[in-house]
Image 1 (cartoon, rainbow over the protein chains, first blue to last red):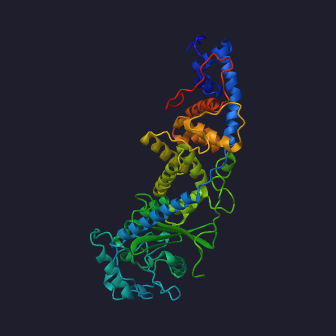
Image 2: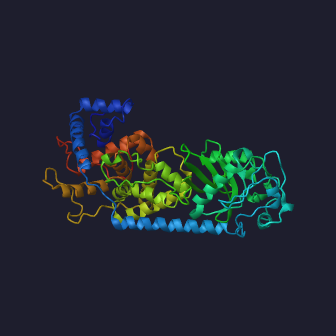
Image 3: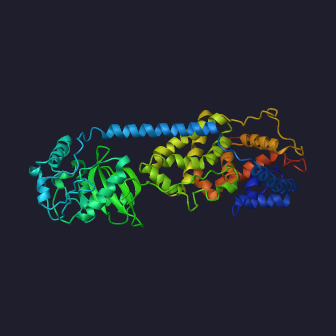
Length: 289
Length: 229
């Protein structure tokens, strides 16, 4: 571009030039030449620089624009409605998955007890700890309520490949258990405290109850899949406990992660797709032990 | 063990005044007692029912100011802000953390505003109940601060929307050129150009710029285009 001293000054070009937008360009050099050689360009450039300060001052002097109360209320209402809609859809989606009776607390599979699984008096949760070197479920020993629950669980999830459930190999290193608990948000703190306390009292490799893993969660009982899930959650440390259980009636893995404080735990409740499509998180919260 | 414990530490809502660049300081929730924005968003994505509402409460004044000044119409701004926050609510799980949460929220709001402007092809103006319609400010007039604000708002509304959005974000909301470029999805040079050309047009509209020699037409072009680059 060459300077054309016969042209009227171009305000946009001068604005770009003044702001340094044209620095180092041929167009910038041409504007500089015009400003240096054409009185009209020089005058407008000087006036623009002076006026720019006044414009900035005008803009800076504008008063704040706090959101009006009615607009804020309307926004809050819209978000609350969205929250209700999502919760309703989530429950509707979850309901058909596991139409399982609530398990009566404090009752255990006879075979599992014989194998050394602790019965928890305080927490009233039956826990079955998995062993990495044992495989195969013990469904035939299901004479108690817990066994019935396992059977019902399998029956309720027909359509899942049959080999999925009994073949599950929970990650014992992560402390995998299948408590049969149906976790609820309102009772989560109590349930997690019971879970953590029970896990601490259980001897490792005490029994193999892989069959108790809800079939929908069998993938996550594989160590590699669980690691992918933990990665999706952004978890860096080894979980304190992993419970292949339910949340609001739907199959869910409850993962208890350590925090910097020994008094708290980071609890993630995830669905069957964790690690496949994001973390499939149903709930994430920090709880005090 | 206590039967029930709080699931989250105390959160302090940070209500801030909107508008001035000073409001930007600490906008990401930087005080020691305040849950960081990023954690609030993660909590929302993880199912915390209250986290997103708190995040919105924390930033809604500034987001509202952007929407109102960009669209120049109260109802349009309210609709755009609501649409934007619902979009953010649903998209939170996809937030990758490449930018600050506030930048992400602003981007969604600005896009909602620009979409509305382009879709309706309406150049809205800020209502000026005490000013005559369409009369530009006369240079040198003694104008009270209140009226100055009205005139400035009206002049802003006269700008092409791309210039207006860039000016609002940089000059009024205090975002950096780099942040604004990310926010608008354009190059930094484009942001600088839009701001410079926008201020030049405002200088004319507000009476700060007259051609001292009377030899050149300095009236800005009435285009909806954007700056160079």
